[in-house]
Length: 362
Image 1 (tube, rainbow, N blue to C red):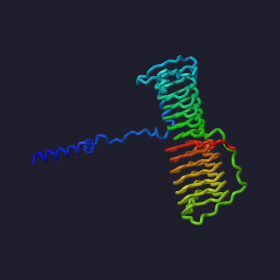
Image 2: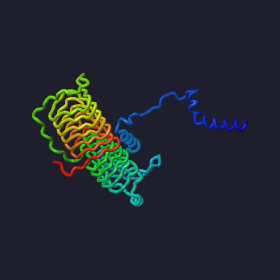
Image 3: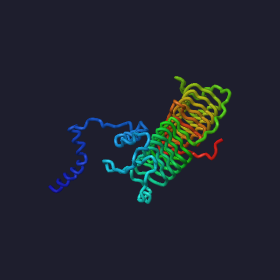
Image 4: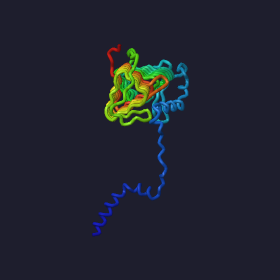
């Protein structure tokens, strides 16, 4: 009998052992304070760039200069053991034969002026330039920071983040996995994949089609046949809602089903639907656009407010999202944008963002 009791006691002890810290905390209550969570990581797209900029200011006085003409290039190690290379005025880092064979640079590259980087290399550490950064094709970068513009060659990757104090340009077939931002302008070309990015102006492709001609007059939108609510300037439709071409409406529109906005419609308010949303060519919406299904935005549209979609947004050429001095947010699980579209503010594809190439834009 004693062996059976001992066996059961051992089993009970093994069962309670993982619960011991929780039981002690339940009795003593020594850790009742909430954890400190730094929310800047989520809310500020330039969080990592700002942290790296602060690190450089503390570690390298030479990088406070606007020109690297008086700086002697050198290699060294930080207190953490990480290697770095300080590049002088010529802007060309020295690549060892071992790094060329491995096709990987395992040290920070810090330019006191502009940087001219080659092609076909993986930069495993951060890259900084007090001037511009221009790269060849088929490079992969952990992170990029430049006071001047950043120009990536074709088929380049950004693995974590990149920020330019002026302009960031990604050539065709780039893959921007992390956060990308610029203080003035972002330019993305065809076949580029992106995630989260922000700039006062985001251009997809170099050229934009001519604006679509607007109708000389618009008819006021008639009340839907099935209207569940008409209060506070909002119409709530019971099922699908179809807006005719060249209509006008002042107020918000909500549909329990899908919604179709006809071409050249003008809506002074927000729209929301619980199905798919189709917006015709040349439509103008002054407020927010929200849908639970897929969202299709035709060519030449103007949408001032934020776009929020639970599935996929497809944006045609010539569409303008937001405005100068009035930035907005575009977010969806998947975002597909044709070359020729423009956005102001934040574009955030939670799973996939893709720039659809255009062979010609009239």
